[in-house]
Structure formats: structure tokens, C-alpha cells
Image 1 (cartoon, rainbow, N blue to C red):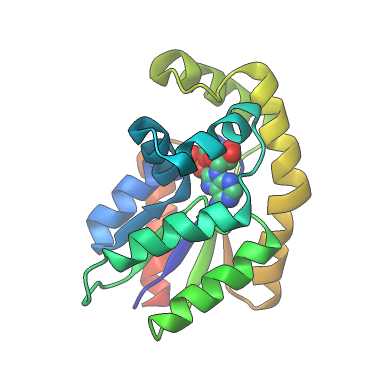
Image 2 (cartoon, rainbow, N blue to C red):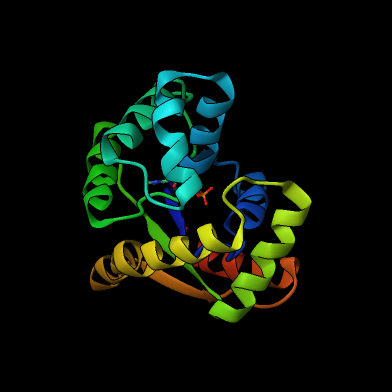
Length: 191
Ligand code: AMP
């Protein structure tokens, strides 16, 4: 299987690039952020627990992430070509969780693709996205906290995969197609 974790700070374009990656490489898609938003929209207990933390820009506890992942994995096709993870793993504990989860499927993470974008550019992009999509966690205060959380908890995940020679950094500045071409080049070298 070709299992990829798309990594990068808030607003780095993970969602946009994910759509293109899953279409080209026919991968199953697991976005923990989307799964959490779906739980909130359904009004489930899990969604209710997650909402206040998401609105504040904090990470949701790992136990909740494990629950939504297990639910999602159960519904995956048996002969999936691979999985694209978007927004997961987001801390070091989750790096171990993904290893265990993929081991259960007799596979492992092939690579992490790290989208690199300067912070000033990110804030600008996210405020624009807030105006278009109306996401409740895209306001300046929450965005700032999401960057703080990213620096403190999420960034170390990239170092973890760098040590294993599994982290590929891609310049996240440019047009959607330019960035996608860079990502494709990395994936094609993995196959
Ligand atoms: P995203 O759509 O990936 O930007 O995620 C939006 C929000 O959902 C984040 O700010 C977190 O509050 C929460 N979230 C998404 N994925 C995770 C994860 N893997 N671990 C913890 N919290 C998450």
C-alpha cells in the first residue's frame, strides 16, 4: 500500500492538495479534521466533546481521534491501494498510533509530505478562507492558537519522520498546480 501523511501548518493547503492526490493516486482519504466536523454536524457525543476544543484552536484528545479513526478504518475497502492521511498524526503520541493502526492492516506509513509555507503567508490565506468557508475556527484569535499548538506539538512529528528518512519537504508556495507537481514528483519516486 502507498500510505502518505500530508503534513504542514494550518493553512498550508493540505485540504486542497489532498483532493488532487487522492484523485491521481486513487487513495482512500482520512482527514481527522473533516471527520471531527462531520461528528459535530451529526450532533454526536464525540462531536460535542470536540467542538469547544476545535473552536479554541486546541488539539482534540488522542482518545477521541482513535475513536473516529477506528470507525473510519472499519469502513475502508479491503483492497484499498493506500491511504492519504490529512491532519494526522498531529503529535508524537499520534505517530505511534498511526504505526499501530497501519500494522493492523499489515502495512506501514510510506512517507510524510511536509508542505512548507512562511507564517505571514499562512495567516493571510487563512483569513481569506475564513471569509469564504465560514469555518468557526478560522478567526484571528483561534488561528494564532492553532499556530502555537502546531509549533509546540505538531512540528516535532516532522523531526520524528526525518530521523526515519521518511519526511519529504515540499515548497508550499506557488499555484495549486505547481505545488501539486512537486508533490507528485515525490510520490512518483516512492512507488
Ligand atoms: P484541520 O481541519 O485539520 O485543520 O483540523 C481542525 C481542528 O480539528 C484542529 O484545530 C484540531 O482542533 C482538530 N483536529 C484535527 N485533527 C486532529 C488531530 N489529528 N489531533 C487532534 N486534533 C485534531
